Image (cartoon, rainbow over all chains, first blue to last red; front, side, top):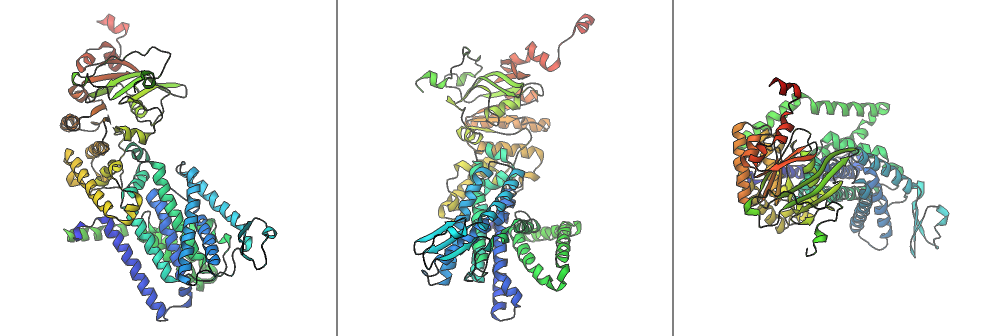
Length: 347
Length: 290
């Protein structure tokens, strides 16, 4: 039976097993009280960034298109998710249900925005896609910086001017332009974050090892050949891009519901690049690598607080060291040998 | 279909029937491919002009000519990688003018490439399964949710892929990465992938390039075998004259984007215009020297 599993599914099982093991270890540490408050506060952001990394890896590693605006989709998910959670606050008693609803709404809206961006963008190739997604990230930031959304008995009120909401008495401002969203109920928790990671992993692995995923990878490897065997290129590019955007939206909602305030400037170009660093460092198409890189690089800046002013310097040195190590001939030869030895045992 | 004007576009030129070189066994059937006055310009350069061709249902046709004659351009026109500037392509009697490359493939033309275009990071089996893409019947959600339909269709795809790989005895390589295969095997895999799309016309762009004489001889047998097995038409571009003269039933010679000769291998071999195109013309001095 073991030999029947393909290399791809062995890798998928390994990745899922690592994530489950990490979850169990961290959860037991947290419940035993043996975890620093710093790390405990980082658990949900780690989950959000892990989802961001694996979803961007779907676009960059599997589809092979460079996206520089992934934080834009996170932002859409964050704001719509928070709005949904606030709107449901008095309607749904269960915190968990509200959280799940918020994640769903975030994913759906980010997916829709991904679709709209995808219509023009996916006709472009290479650098142009990167430029357009970069612009998209900036545009969405400006939009949320100038958007006012209120809720009263009549429903939602939307305006680009703060004094034009025309809400009735008792109305509540949810999105306050450059002030962002304040007074968020922190309903995100680690278990849900873990569930979201697992869900995204299963979706990505199952997608990649199916007809649609093969088509997506074929487009990455050779677009002209993919067309020549009758694969509708735009359709599959869109499938991958929208899936990736929706996952980023869910991650954004999870991230936002972990803080009491969230502003649009949090999801700027730097965040997009940070997520791209996770993906590149972890290896293109390598989901486990993305997860490890995202988790490590989220914890690292906090763990380096003791270096105070030299924090970012040390961070940069660590990044460079990891990149050098990953590509050093010695390490490569070692992993290669390990692989051959393992292969020999299997036969 | 009943109105002939709908099928054949009206041109100012009188439609001249291309001199049919269809083999006898296909003579009573409608041709699989017809090109009428096909041409393409790139800027001011006319790459192909007034290209007329007819290919029978089970014909093996050859397209030859010196380097830069426009042979691959003709393939790119047929598969709509380039849009023709002029003329009509009829595939099984239907006009293909509004189709895209992927629609052309679904309509029945599959091709290989001169500079091999495999999905290098995927396995040999996955490359063939990508050829089968439009014959595997489950959607994205079946794949994500792993429904019984997914398992059933994937098993069927695996069996078909293995069956196709058997043509070139490549079953044992199914798990290997396509990009790591030796050159000849990559060429063969491209043919298998094209066959997997279930075409009615197979276009081979220099299938024997880089092969040694014994490999070429084997390839010739295989092309004929594929034709007999699948009952499809094959059109190939090739510089290896032993292959072209050995298996092609009709040959079309291009030079500078123009058809300079059409006929059976024997006719082409003795055609003075063709010899001149390949070897050049004797100038006056040479003639006098003789």
